[in-house]
Length: 68
Image (cartoon, rainbow, N blue to C red):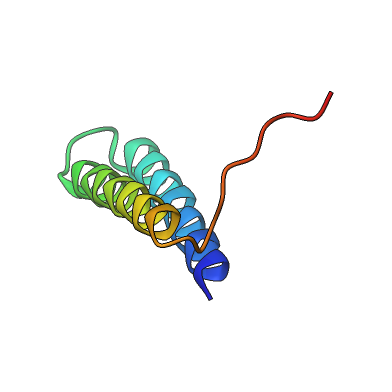
């Protein structure tokens, strides 16, 4: 359940970043839509960090090392 939620938040972050780029090109930086899209991306990034931390502390996900 937690892994699809993490992927959904990652997809929302990428979509918000794309929206910010679209508004940058479309409005040429004259409107606040780009700023709003990037603010949403920052909020989603913080949400993702908190979600990963809570999932790690509760044992739902576990870090692993790089195989040699």
